Image 1: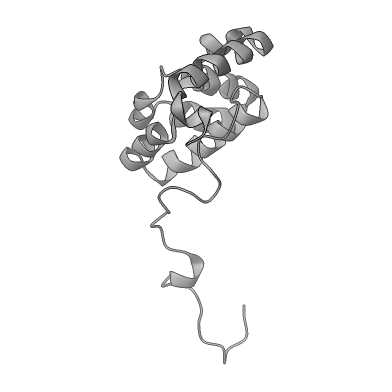
Image 2: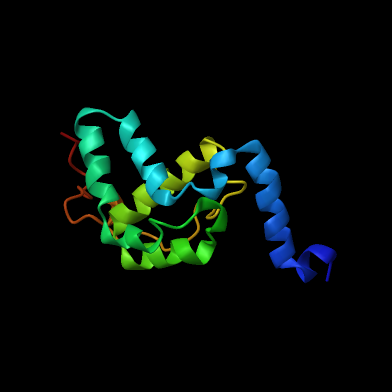
Amino acid sequence: MNEAGKQPAMNLSLARVYFKHSDPMVAQRTWQHVLDEIIKLKSGPTQYRWQSAAKDKAYDLIRSRLLIETQAEHFLEVLKSGTVSTNAYLRKTHNFALDMSWLPAPVILAGSGPQSTSKTNAQSPWRNTDRSSPPR
């Protein structure tokens, strides 16, 4: 095992020190702060949708958690307790925090985590599968 694997607590402390020098808010920024900042940037119906999404009870699991202390397991709990919409907004929130350089590294990777169980167009009973008739 390498040195980094032997001292994970010390490594997290060192990462916090380095990150604090580049961003003084790192010790205070929570997921609620990220949601609030996203909502401020939106307007009209989009802002209303984000306000509704931010009220999702599943976010209570991470709402007050510091970004720097968030682990994949925390997001998995949110994804398990939420809906398809929770999944979509959590990923958007995560990506916003990454884009703002508020996270040192991704917490979840694209395509990871629970998959949507909603029907795709191919599974839809309303899809026209009769190839003999021309499309309307």
